[in-house]
Amino acid sequence: AWGAMGAAGAEGDGGCPAMLEEAGLLQLSGQRSSGTLVSGTVETPFLCPHVATRVGRADARKLEPCIEAHYDAYRAGLKALGGHGFDHNESMEHAFFCQQFVERPPAAPSQSPCSAVPCDPGDAGCWERKMMQTGVYFSVRPLHYRRDDFAPGCTKTLEAKWYRDTLMRRFILQADEEMPYQVPVNTTAKYINSIKSVLSADGGDFISTDQRQLASIRVTVKQIQWENIITHAYAVPVNPDSGLVYSPAFNSIYISYDKTTQQLSHFMIVAANADGAAQTRYIGNSYNTMFESVANYLYTPLTGSTKNPLYFALPEFDPLDWQVPWLFNIEMWYADHPPPAPSYIWVNSTMVCTTDPSQTPVQDQVNAKEYYMGALIEAYQGQDAAENSAMSVAKDAFDTSLHPTEKLGACQPVAEQYKLLLDSGFCDSATDALPWEIPPTCV
Figure: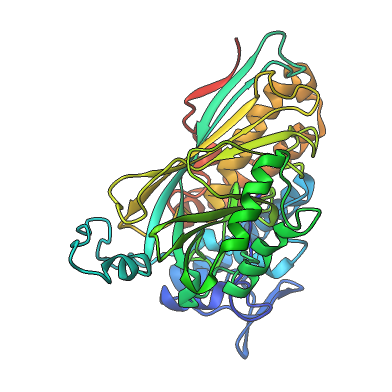
């Protein structure tokens, strides 16, 4: 349940330099080596050297044993959970850890594109100008609703519903905007090649289990005049505070329109695995249609099979009416219990245009996803199995790393000062109950 995490900028900088420089703190570069971190040409004994700028070198020396113990526990917790998004890159782990001690600058005010007026019917170029407008952001709420008749730890039906808001930006492929680093389909040429692959005998990048739908999509793709296409590509932008990305459920969403008809041509969804990396691609060519495919990837420990039937739909919406939210819906069944048996999970995502491009810190997003998935796994397995599971042991190790003032001896002498040092909100998702629409319950 780890989102896509990475560092923007030069190799090895861990994403910290720009973040710290923007915050007016000591710039960090290089990697930790034997307890000493190199910052530019100056060696400092501090694991997170900007802490010394924030609290002073004398206090930083007192806090350093606690910070080092916290870091060691944090890395051990990541290792215990396994499958995190750092790919054993210590510089990225280090940058992510130090993020919690950074004072973030206030976000710059932004003008709203959400109150844009409709096109004047007499303005022939209005539609295309507005469709090519850049810098539009959307607050995204994927509502996860699980109603599972086959959870082994539940004698009846396991029901749960939860959400966690995130942010997406709308990029324009034809405007050659730079896409976030986690998005592999990041140019018009790559997008066209992926869409055209559906014409191959095996479906190319796509799996369609309904031959009539596949035939219809192929007709659409054959008729595309690419010079007349405008593609809106939605993706989670890099968090400017940390240089990291958390990209749950969707790696990217592409919706293409024909300039000559001003209508939908086709769309492509690139699903994300637990690390936020691109996996299965799904293609459709109409609104309000439930397209049929398969999971083709084990997205969580509860997915069960890559052959799980997965259906998806894009309800009709006006891409220029930013005051009205738009939606995307996914429904999935177990391979052993396909339709017409009831599906076991729906993910209904609502995209609302927003004037606020700020993001929840990546650390909090990761902790929240772990919280929700951990609770679901425990309910799915049953309490007795969960208490003795490897997942439970791993979660305990990670929780220890998130509560250093309570569980690490090195932090106890400086507990109060250390709590003041942490960013407000850090570990809130681990220490406070997050909202459930419906907590995991056997009904």
